[in-house]
Length: 430
Ligand SMILES: Cc1ncc(COP(=O)(O)O)c(C=O)c1O
Image 1 (cartoon, protein in one colour):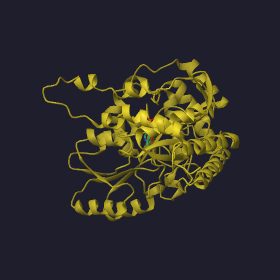
Image 2 (cartoon, rainbow, N blue to C red; image 1 turned 90 degrees about the horizontal axis):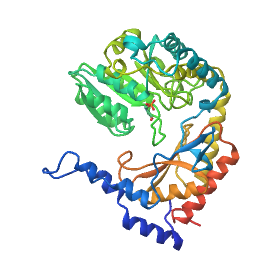
Image 3 (cartoon, protein in one colour; image 1 turned 90 degrees about the vertical axis):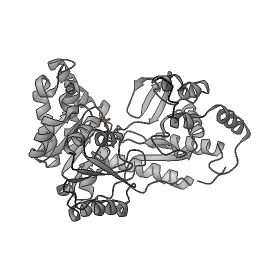
Image 4 (cartoon, rainbow, N blue to C red; image 1 turned 30 degrees about the vertical axis):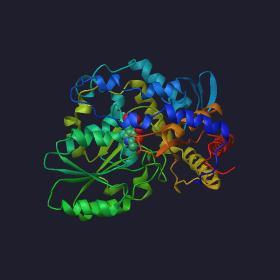
């Protein structure tokens, strides 16, 4: 983005914020003297308070009401570009009805782990429906997508094995690799040469698995699955793909990037979540039955935690029916995505030329990003921010995401607000 001059009010405000605010270094500063107590890191952590004092703290905003494209925060109705409710299913009347029926029949929770005492017939129905939709032998419904990744990797990656993981993969994949007894090699984001060089170096290792997000949650990039599949074949590695942001969004039938690239049969383990396109909470793993049976009996994150509650299971069963039978929502989502990307591109902002409804707006400096986020909110636009360590230092961004429920008026309002505030901050020319 071109850097231009800043209007004088904003300049004063930013100088004031930058002087007082050192969010980045407070985030990164984890080194403490040996003689300090274990809790001193907590007592010394003041970045959130600093940001609150300056009125730019962006987290845990309390939402008083939700719609599909709007929410109410601090009594103010704002358009949201901070949700992953891509298909608008979180408040769909049929989904709510199905959730309510399950709630009334089974109560608010399962009060136990699926392993011992928390599996309902509804969990099994959902597993069968997922397997049928994806054309896979078997599926396991877990309590979150985070646990699906963490639990699967932690039990699959044995002592002698090596995982090859994209550096931009989701935190749950990092956590799974950290807990597993095998080794993990991280390849540069979407860099197939780097992946190949690591596979080559480890060619004598028998147990190899490549793990990748299909759609990366911050950049909105799509993994180069055709090339990854080739490398997996050439080097005898298995392949696990996290379709958290691909499910419902990509592919003719909404089965994700694996369908979009026509590589479904080459993917050994498919992980998904109900917290994005399906508008709820929960996660799943789909694979050959021998693989799922192993995970079902070995994954601690599945066995030692309470089952997904009935209302969520019931709602997701109906949501999946809609997702798999009605492509209108996906088409609308693609239209909205193309519209907003074209608008940002015309403003001079770099965007990914793909169908992914995640559109990061890179600002760079953390204080400036948080201030920009506040200006957007003042204009009636609620967005999320990503700062270090979620993204590398000085790569702070406003993370925007779109749904099929946004209207053209919503999208125009969002673009107008970005344009005027980026101009105000001297990031775009007047
Ligand atoms: C790529 C990716 N994988 C997994 C998850 C975890 O999903 P859940 O929110 O269902 O725990 C997320 C959620 O942010 C994600 O973006």
